[in-house]
Amino acid sequence: MLTRTLTKLLDAGDSESAEVGALDSAFAQDMLRALASRPRSISPKYFYDAQGSQLFDRICELPEYYPTRTELRILTANAREIGAHMGPRAEIVEFGAGSLRKIRLLLDAMDRPARYLPIDISGEHLAQSAAGLQHDYPGLDVQPLEADYTQRLLLPARLPGAGQRVGFFPGSTIGNFTPQEALHFLQIAGQVLRGGALLLGADLIKDPAVLHAAYNDSQGVTAAFNVNLLARANRELGTRFMLDQFAHSAFYNAPQQRIEMHLVSRRRQQVALGAERHEFDEGEALHTENSYKFTVDGLRALAQQAGFRPGPVWTDEDRLFSVHWLHAPS
Ligand code: AVJ
Image 1 (cartoon, rainbow, N blue to C red):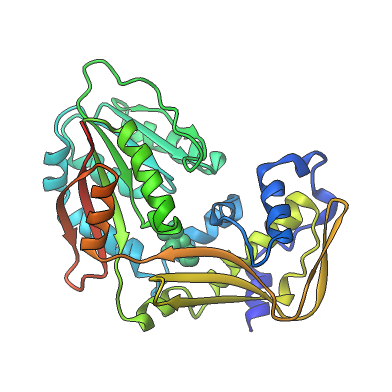
Image 2: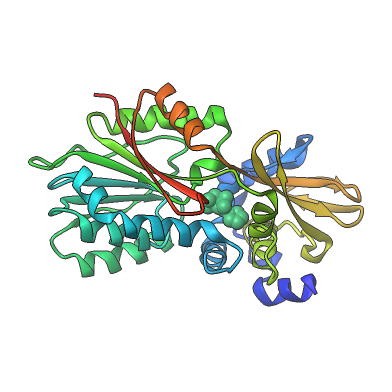
């Protein structure tokens, strides 16, 4: 059943189409490192090629995946108040802008927003969405930036006459970082947003059964999203991962307060990357994602440690998800 779903959802990838020179890419380098290390793990940022971004959009529509729709509900219910915090002519920097649905909600509640700078690693997806947004908001200066915001943050200088610079980091993507990496990201964000603020979405600790279901949906879309990492490697790097020989595994690690996703080899097998051969034993895994969950107070403490001054917090009735206003250092 899983296999059938996977073949429906995934382009199996064809090693013939892997580009020459692709082995120099950051993805190739990190995949090589992942295959050589124990335990094997790779950054979840590589999920988001065109296909992965599409699969993620489908995850957001799943009945079990509550974060996206809950955050949208929180933003909708509090848009006026959030808009008031932003003030006139504000400039928004969005980290990891995906489909740009959430930002429209904010823009509509803001007083003459001056500029919007979406940053995303998936350039094609971003350029498309940004063009659509620019069309709908002709008075807004939209400047998409294809970049990896976990590596560096080089932003254009502030617009003359603009209001405060507000960072927007929705979706609980901060949960992909270890606590130490999250602290580091917040410190860098604090510098870029100096004198402004950060609007941050964070998923909350809750009944493990609810968390488990959100990453083990009945339609197998999350499984396909996970396996797409290997399909992408087949397409771009010429590896020949046998996609149906890897099982999606996602579970809540309570002591670490995180969902972990892994790809578990169903049998002993070899994969090739360039000149190297790597073996997976039966049951051996590639760790593909951590998705940390937070308490409201824990997140505020983390932000404070990075130099932010925590402001208002908005949550839903069931306290599934939280949205935080954090004042950046001055
Ligand atoms: C985009 C990182 C917030 O962790 O919930 C969804 C990614 N992974 N289903 C998350 C994801 C599996 C998502 N983030």
